[in-house]
Structure formats: structure tokens, C-alpha cells
Length: 252
Image (cartoon, rainbow, N blue to C red; front, side):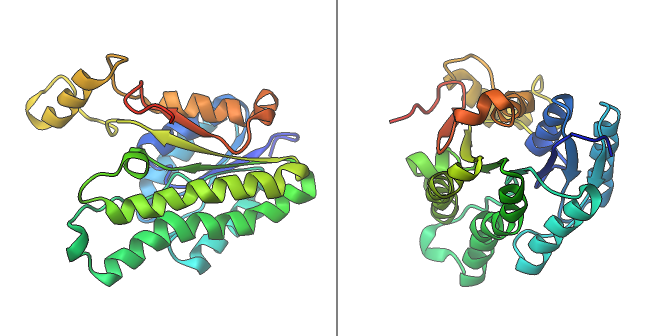
């Protein structure tokens, strides 16, 4: 491991936004711990992409919605690099369905993955950051949590809770040199989406038309912001919600 580099764990980084974050943090010189819950091949492919950018990488598979697995993910990161400096809680699930028809087990699964998982990971990672006197914790919320959408009530609850957690961590751990912020992304087509083929992407085409910036998001849009937050220049940004959506939803 190259000396002096910081280590970043990004959950759900085997594809899409998480993969883009891994790339941008690697370009900024951070070692990367790639996490996924099921697709080991995808996680290992991202780790290889990261190594090609000149930093070290490891893979820590596990379901963050299970407390023991979340803690094991942190342990694997520490075993690989000796500590952990940056935690990006990107992984989430977003099932949709009528509020009155939500089964209790489905509700509990959403809460475990979207809310409890980030809490368990932060509790396991923060002692290492406190010891160093430096750290970054970054959560994800979403437009569902800010505006409310039909069929997404239980997702909205779980993601909105992380906004409260973000502010609480910012106040409690700011004196220890650790910042806590939250990203609210707009629409980001998944890896491999053929945006030139309108038939399977009708919804994306409508969202594109409605976006004031005239385009949809790219993973580097979020990855670049997170790289800034993880830089020394980003150290005075604390307890903030950062909206990366092209202007579809504005702070209020």
C-alpha cells in the first residue's frame, strides 16, 4: 500500500453511481474498498479499474442490511489498509408499491439496508477516524425523501432519516476533524443505458425534457463532488445536503 494515501469505502460500488465515485476518488489519490452484496465479479472488475488509475484497491463483499455483515465489511477494509478514512454510504434499495400494501418484512428490509446499514457502518468506521483526527462520512438521500412520491413512502422515510443522522454526526464529530454530509442525486441512468433508443427509455426522455440543465446526470457529477468533500479544501463543508440534480429540485 502506498504510504500517506487515505482509504475510502464506497458501498454499492460495483456499478452505476458507486462505480463512478470509486473512479473519482481513485483519481484523487485515495485507496478504494469496493463493496457489493451479490456480484463479486462486478466488484472485482471495478477494483481492477481503480488499480489502473494508480491506487490500491480491495473488495469487501457483504449485505449492509445485516449488522454482522456491515461490521465485517469495515473489518475487511481495515485489514486491507490499516484504517478507514472515508465512508460513502451509497448502497440502497428502492422498491415501490402502495403504502397500504407494504408487507412488514419488506418494510424492515428497506429500513435495514437504507437506514440501519449506514448507521452500523458509521459506528464501526468512526473510531478509526477519531483516532486519526480526520474523516469524511457521506450519506445519500434523494428527491423521494424531499418531495414525497406515491408508492415510495417507505423509501422516503428511510432516506430522510439519513438527513437527520448527517446533521447529528456533523455536530458530534466535527470537533474531531470529521465532516458529515449528504448527497441528494437527481436522475442518473444506469451503466449501459442506451439513451439514443427512445423506446425503452421513455421515462428518461421525459425527465431529460423537464431538467433545467438539459441533460441527465453522469456518475462523475457525483463522484467529483464527493472527491471535493474528501479534499482538504472540502473540510469546511459540514452537515450539508448537496443536491446534484441539474435544478429539478432546489433547496428550500
